[in-house]
Length: 336
Picture (tube, rainbow, N blue to C red):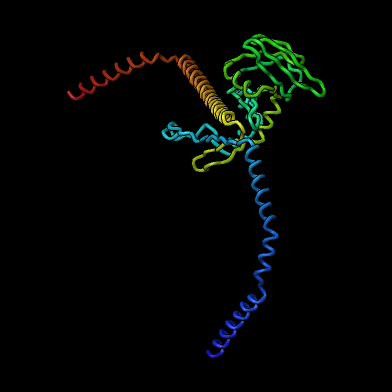
């Protein structure tokens, strides 16, 4: 008991000595001098950090995420009533692999027009207009060297367009008419204008190259989106799958998800139709086999009747009735 009290006093004394030494060693004037010399570095650090954050937020386009949820479970009332196995494959892992397959993604994205991308100049960043473009460009006979090259387009009037693009060190400029197929150096185009007022407003704000479009290599675009589409199990018990994508254009991200959902619905219906058709074919085959067996049995019965000289069924019934009447008459006579 006494030993514990002594140790406690020693710890307190030791702690007081440390505080006393710290007070003696700490020089407030030296601290203020160091802080005064370093304050500009601290301010510079915060300025650089704030500037970097501002530039990043200012010059980085917003990234949007769209997702869709698919449910695999099928409520089969006939299966419950008839107590038969489900003819449809509901392996959710297999369905996930289907959604992840490149052929499926390619088929789904074929529902969206990815051949031409439309861009407009902004105050800070250029942005993709996608389906909000005030004009439409149809292309054919494309020279592969033109894919991925920005083609500047301006509208001096409602019937005339000027196009300009660069391939290597060469510049190609050409005026074309609106509403008819026109041949450029590397492609044929048909331009349709939807909203000339909006085009004029954009051109008044940006005098040089307010619009441009890009003819895409669709296979490369599909490869790009294939790598950015995420498929994951959402709920095992509910058999739900979530498909998501991140894209700089919100409308395009939404359209991609809708296209995948529609493609999967069609795939699922087609698969179920094939399964149902196989079952119907099997039933038809079995009915055919049963019909042939019945026909064979009937032929054998007819042959047996002929060989044994048996009468028809109606004749035999008449004979049996007459015999029964005779037996009853004989019984009555015996009783009398």
